[in-house]
Length: 74
Image (cartoon, rainbow, N blue to C red; front, side, top):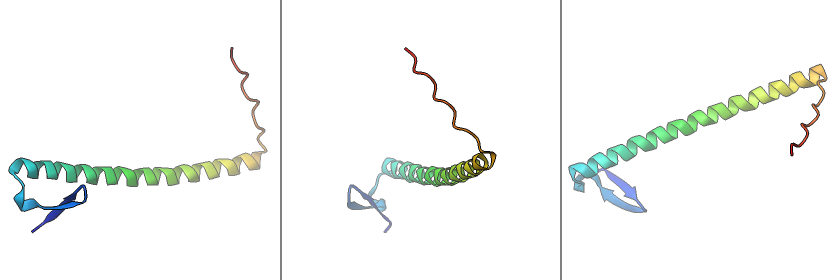
């Protein structure tokens, strides 16, 4: 008997109506897609950190000067 949990309560999938099973399938698909996006964001953040480190290294090599801050507008 496959089970799933909602709000800490276990339910049997066999007890669901057809509409309930469709809702559960949609929820499971959504959770899978959200995990996939979170994993992609982790990859992007890793790449971003690498690009920042590379840029900082290049800035140190070139002795780039810090730009003057823009004047505050009124």
